[in-house]
Structures are given as structure tokens and as C-alpha cells.
Image 1: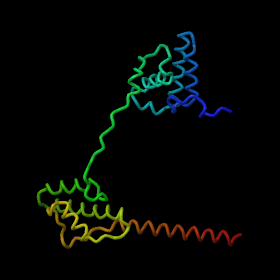
Image 2: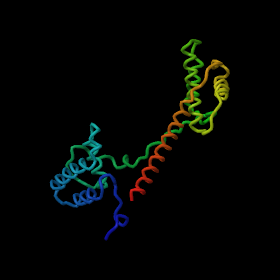
Image 3: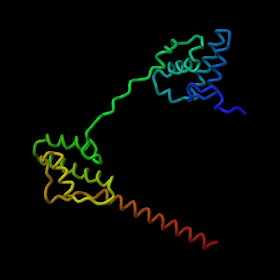
Amino acid sequence: MQYNTSRHPLTIAEYGRSIQEMVEYAVQLEDRDERSRAAKTIVNAMAILNPGLKEYADFKHKLWDHLFIISDFKLDCDSPYPMPDKDLTHVRPEPLPYPQKNIKLRHYGSIIESMIREAVKMEDSPEKQQVVEAIANFMKMSYLTWNRDSVDDEVIREQLREFSGGKLELRDELKLTNRFIDLREADRRNQRNKNLKKRGNNNGYSRSK
């Protein structure tokens, strides 16, 4: 038995070893017309094996490019598209620069900081107060996502005041939502109910035996 680890590595693994062997066979054909017919047959098989390419407008072009790449650019045949440049296919794209942001409190992320900056720019109005309260509720939810313990509303008030440079304040009587806590507690209750139900079913099964 021959293992894949001892075989020639697959050039494009998505098409599998059968396609690669078909391409290698086509390269060795002496008659150009026969090579061209074999190439068209292989491209049709590649389209069946990789149907996701059909989402692209030029998917046929991609298939022929892949065919030539698999052949290591050795397949001399008639093609509706020119053979791609071998040098260009091995060029690595430039790495994307990773955004460097100095986030004061990482459990809030940069989104909340951006929201606070935009809220500061707003003119005083009932709409601005609603936005500020929504930000504070979102801050509390984010805090509880990373901290299992509860958080006092005054902590959120102070952090909102700090992040906004003292320009955003919450109403004294406002009570921030505990929606995340309620949802988490509901999940716990549901899990306990499932465990009790499963335990009851197991006990019933044991008694029936």
C-alpha cells in the first residue's frame, strides 16, 4: 500500500489526487490535439469537484488557471485563456497592517470608546440622553460578559464620566439594566431543568428494568 505521505504533494488540494494524476497524464500526451481534449475534460471535472467557483463571474478562467498551476505550467494545449504568469502566482501579498489602538479598558473594546466620542459631540437633548443611557447599559453588559460577578451601577457611571472627560453624565435616578444577568440566570435554570429531567428519565428507565 502506498500512503499519500510518500507521494508527490498535491499542488491544489481541493481537487484531490485524481485530478492531479489526470493532469500529469495529459502533460505526457504527445499529440497537442489530444492534450487539448484531455484538458477540456479535466476542467469540466474540476468544475464538478469545486462548484463554489461558479459563484464567480470568471470561474472558467480560474479553472483553467488552476489547471496550468497543477501542471506546473508544463501543459501545452489550446486554451480559451492565456497561461498565467508563473512568477506572479508565487508572489505573496503584502501583510495587512494590524491596527494599533490604545484601549484603556480592553473588556469594553474600541467600539464603546468610539460611541462615547460621538456622544460627546452631540448637542444636549433628550435624544443625547437616550444615547448616553444606551451606552451605559452596553458598558454594563460588556463588563458582565468578562466578569462573572455583579457590577455596581456607580462603577459604570464613574467609568463613563472618565472616558468622556466629564462630559457625559447619567440621571441620578437611572437604574441600569440587568438584562445580561437575567439571561444568564435563565440559562442556568434551563440547564438545571434539563439535568433534572434527564435524571428523572434515567431513574424511570432503571425502575422499568
